[in-house]
Length: 343
Image (tube, rainbow, N blue to C red; front, side, top):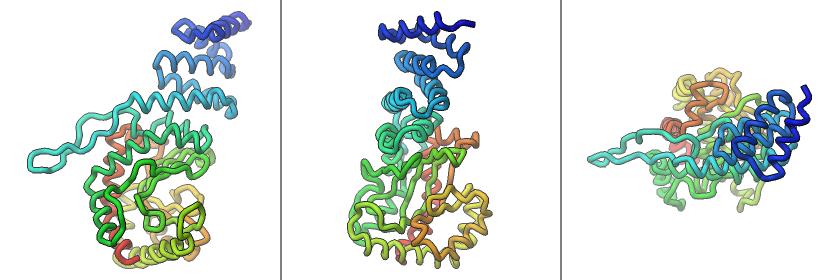
């Protein structure tokens, strides 16, 4: 079939700045006859974007970027689509107070703000780190602010205050960072040289899957513009040594059992989570690892993976994601507190 007349019609709509329902229909037809026509997919995405069909726009843009990962128009439209999605979605609800002061779970769920679904992970993978940070930052910050209201967060702040450290919230605003291609992360206020209450978001092409992590991490590098880097590195190394001693004794069985029950995995250096390690082997690795300074990063915690249906459902729903983060950090809080006291 000669698609030239159909394509010309689609181009004429675009030249007139018409991205309405009729233009959408024409470009949809064109993608059926020419499934690798990135211009048709890009125009279709623009139509969906203008019509408020953000999920359809994101799907079309993903198709464009599969055909041509360097398509800058598609990257820009994806960034705009994520911005709109974040603005339109409800924020995760803070825990509501029942009579007597006890918190009860909030009812209902949102769809995007604070949640991570296919579109967010596509943006994380396709956009440059700073652009991904700009687009996804509002969703991450919404998640962090909701986590601040959970009881475990106040206990961490209290422990740090007792040790003479400043801060009234677990996470401050704008406390999330780009860790490189396909990686964003956040850690608690004042935690650069401490055992970190750490959240990470990954969509790294060679991993073959996207993921969210929550747990305890140790950043043993001197990189970045942090103050007191030499003294700070020594400080976090002391915390890591205390962590190893605790995991070798009091926490060996507890951590192994927790990892078994909660999809817990270790991560180190710039590698993906060690999903091929059984929990007992992972705990033994943590205890016997003598190369932490060279590795620069050691982490243990829970993981959610996009290719697991239940995990994907949790990540997409802001309420469920906050609850998962809360449960993970609540479970690991006694270990973090013990390490913090001994470091």
